[in-house]
Length: 225
Ligand SMILES: C[S@@+](CC[C@H](N)C(=O)[O-])C[C@H]1O[C@@H](n2cnc3c(N)ncnc32)[C@H](O)[C@@H]1O
Image 1 (cartoon, rainbow, N blue to C red):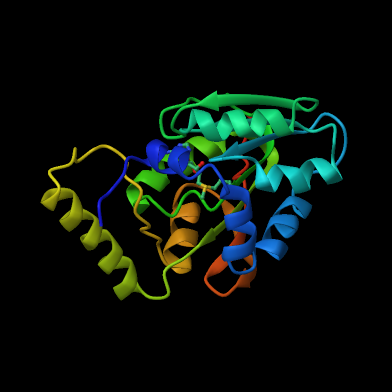
Image 2: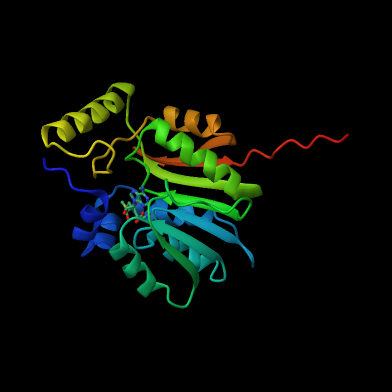
């Protein structure tokens, strides 16, 4: 298996991407609308989408809340261009870049969402991202994560060691992002979210290996003198 850089992988598969996700990924017909249903309703809500791709989750969300303001981040400019075409009449700001590098404004988002994007990264990478995300949410803000997870710790370790083996065999840049699925177990994912400061981290539903997790922002403690 020849590894491809993350953005090139998705750009090469843009044609037919939406149909592939909706027909080939088990549970997609239910988990996209379910994820969208957990996002905030009402006017003046700000939502951040990490790895928004062509905006499948946003199609369902805008159907429920057409006036929401959304910031979408993705490394693939082609995926973002497809999204832009779909939602030219919506309040949406798109950022082409890695969510690990883009800085988030503090206390800004009522909710964040990520669907099928974060299963490529280590617990350490996610910890830094989730700490940054926690501070970007408003006091009552929350994060809805829908992604697929490894069925056991053994499988989790196997995926990471396979990725390292393939990278070294193919002489690839150690720090660059290549497309290869390295899901954590759902237990490890919830642990990382708690460690990053989220409270009330709950598994809401699952469709075989795909889970929706909801994690609330840790409200900073205020000391009264
Ligand atoms: C399987 S797609 C999911 C897209 C969309 N959320 C959906 O469910 O259809 C994964 C997306 O994550 C993006 N992605 C992967 N790593 C990323 C990173 N570090 N920063 C931003 N986007 C990333 C990819 O470019 C791709 O568009």
